[in-house]
Image 1 (cartoon, rainbow, N blue to C red):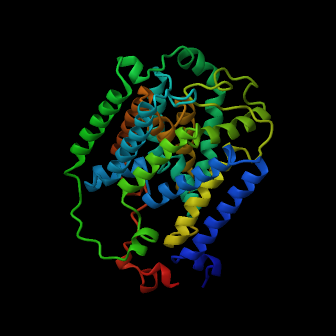
Image 2: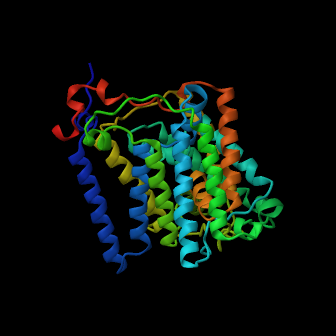
Image 3: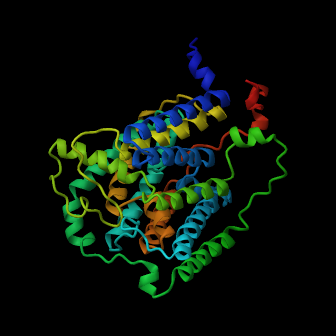
Length: 414
């Protein structure tokens, strides 16, 4: 008979005070970065943004694959509504803020090129999300929850980034380099408020179509502590938090997204190994708001700090809800993670972003590229789910707290 180490038993139960200690450590790390930099700057903001990002993803369990799986197989549209809420809040706060204060989108706004390669890359990303059972952010979240299957998926995703960087000169020459970068207010000749109204109308139409896919749920009589710390948040609230964070990132002049951070590290490793040339057209100066500089060494830059912040936030929430558990994986799952991860990395690198950075942050500023990516990534997810309709493509929903042992029902009791 084998037993788990005491620390794993401890973390598999709701531990809000342990989670509070993790968050305190993140706050102290932010203070240390502020002192080291002489001010609350790029690295400090990256850590805060990463923590909030991790909280939103872990508490809402947001996943584009799960959203479409729930709708297609369970008739539940709540996860998709959560993504629509993220779009609505991000656009309202960002475009609304620009219009109110008479501002223009910053130079690094996620207004990407729209060419024939974008829908291809987005579709491949969507299919890869199903094969790997989640996107890049989903696997970072799972890693923070103790799921070891995220390790081969993330390693393969970095390999996909390297392949995307290796093929970048070709992608730049045949498509990206000379592609238009449509910004809806300028392309349609309309104002910011009109663009916002148009985008919100599209979101409202989608929500209207999903309205009948609402499960009949009775009143929630669980305590507020359980609903906040233990049970997953309603997807719409988690999506709204994510949308607000995207808008705040524009206010801080640092558009949210983890693809740039992952690709920056991948480029450094690929260049060090001689797999990519030192100069990659478009990436050094930035294209579509995505800047992937060639760093000489891996250090605690904002590109790395935001990833650690994400892991801090997601791990704290996993500990608070008692959902941290080390779980292994089978050989077949490892193969699926590798194949799907490579598709994810290549698709995200070639499309210049993923769901948060390319789609949500793009829609937030009125970029056509955000809508195109979201549409074709969703099409890839739906097509792959049709070919592989197993519910195992995403993690099963967590056990409701009323089915948990008695000592898990009150997170403040242990």
